[in-house]
Image (cartoon, rainbow, N blue to C red):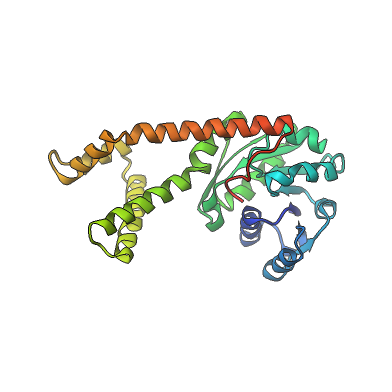
Amino acid sequence: MKIGFIGGGNMGEAMLAAVLDKGLAAPQDVRVSDISETRRRYLEEKYGVAAVSDNLLAAGNVEVVVLAVKPQNLAQVMADMRGQLKDGQLVLSIIAGAGISTLRPGLDHRSIVRVMPNTPARIGEGISVWTATPEVTGAQKKWAGAILGAMGKEIYVDDEGYLDMATAISGSGPAYIFLVIEVLVEAAVGIGLSRDIAMELVVETILGSVHFMQKSGKTPAELRRMVTSPGGTTAEALLKLEEGGFSDLLIQAVSAAYDRARGLGANKSAGSGGDGGEYD
């Protein structure tokens, strides 16, 4: 597979590394464009790929063109590339907030896959939700699935609207988990544990709990009840969380993220800018 990466940012690099590591493409079959000479030199030296400053050169004579630029740079990239892509090329976009209704006319191209990855993809533990335009062929869908699968798990959906929902859960979700870890560590330090011990206890507890749930075959509610003895320490802690509105706050947070994701997509379609994106 020959792949051209437009933009060499963090998520683009994660995808590049995964593609090469899984043998989906050889270094000589990959080109990356980036405006920074320092960044181009770094990518060439670390991965053995050709790094160029010209987006059209990176996209020429490849089967898959990965759009990995920051959202604020998308308009210029689309202006440069509009009408220049061949019919048989697949565009795979990981740009936050840029919907197909923006990409298709902006590039004057119809074979497009839009993806919502998340940051654990950088270590091969991500989850990507993606959709495709009707013009994307079965073979191209297999290419997309293989590329995204190299970064972790992938889920295909027919409705692009699900990507905004995924943004609020898996896209923003790592930040929710990091906040929980941060707060639990501070709480542990507050009751007298050293920061090093607190961090290890919190991280290993979260990892172990998730793995236990995956292997147990039980629902989170069943497991929560299993470890909560009436009148015990866990019951007392959970009572305080509920008194503070923890469940309702989390639901509200996800709803707010979803509304923001939908708003970013609408703004992009209207031609105005959004924020910088969550995963690059």
